[in-house]
Image (cartoon, rainbow, N blue to C red; front, top):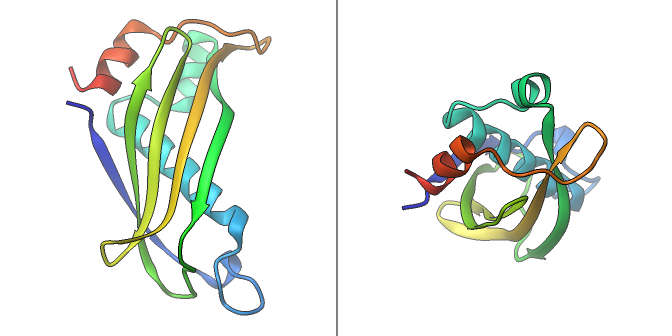
Length: 133
């Protein structure tokens, strides 16, 4: 079973445009936090993966749908789920919800690369952790 991670987010003034609506690029920032916290919940941190394993994850592709505006002071949840894992990449589905209703939906493909930006294998222990084994 693949783990679903939920991260609470509060919408602050800095997240919004002049009309008090979340600026579209900030959903990507919210989702980045969701992926980072999912890894952290599995015992992995981006810095230690870079320092210890000499690898990091880069976004290769994003497919996003903005379904409803989130607004100043909204309480949101970022839900992150692994949907596919390959040798050097994995795909996650991320949604942002307000009161259980989806306001943003995204699929993101991440590639595991070394310090020279060359693709490398996702470490086997991380692969198993992401798959929920």
